[in-house]
Amino acid sequence: MSMSCAFIGLGVMGAPMARHLQQRGFATTVYNRTTAKATQWASDYAGSAAASPREAARGADVVLVCVGNDDDVRSVVYGADGVLAGMRAGSVLVDHTTASAELARELALAAAERGIGFLDAPVSGGQAGAENAVLTAMIGGDLTVLEQVDAVLACYCKTRQHMGPAGHGQLAKMVNQVCIAGVVQGLAEGLQLARKVGLDADSLIRCISQGAAGSWQMQNRYRSMWDQHYNHGFAVQWMRKDLKIVLDEAQRQGVSMPLTALVDQFYAEVEKMGGSRWDTSSLLARFEGK
Image (cartoon, rainbow, N blue to C red):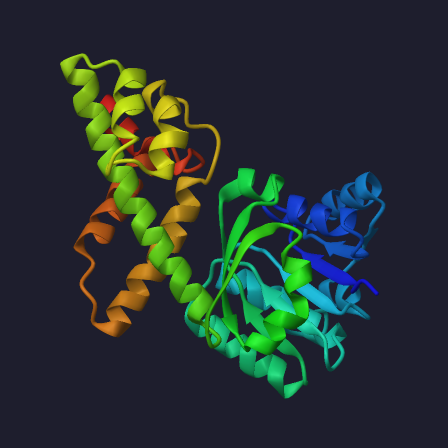
């Protein structure tokens, strides 16, 4: 029989992820801080909306969380109205939020005290990946727990990779964000040079994307960058939140990350330009005075 699910957080990622669950036959109850959004989701997809995280989690086999940051996660997990108060022993809590590895380890312990399984499973692929059910999940926790809920995660995650114990999913996501930041900065600088010397963007990318310079960012963002269209995609403010997590972890580990720190400051400049909600590819805007 299909497992019942609760999904906490209906942002640009969470809403389509929950939709895929419901449409694949996993009866899903949702909770969102903005009640109207949860009510509308339930109406659109014949699901259920709950008035609190605890109510959403009550009776669910799997509870999935996708909110903003560590504090947001704690606010929906703990307390009298948190999901742990409503979950039963033997159920599983999955946190899709990009958060700290410390939080993941904390949640794993809190869940274990109640006989509840836990996975930290941040995702990559952005809103388009969520809409099209092709996200990549980097997963920390007990492998047997992952096997228990893999069919649920498969509804919206094309790739699901177990990385190790609790916290390792978040550590892998940190590496993911570091690599994205460096690639986007390189692409921005390259496109700046291309424009200055009069190269045709389409011809250029058609050529160099087929070689060692090719990347997802190049294939999917070069045209919007060239046209200075940034009102889409993964917001700068969220990338800065992620990079802070990275840099805090790097400091704890004694790891030097000068490029990541520099790109984070470039994103701070984009925010000062009014680009907090622009896509992360807006690093090019720094050069063009948009």
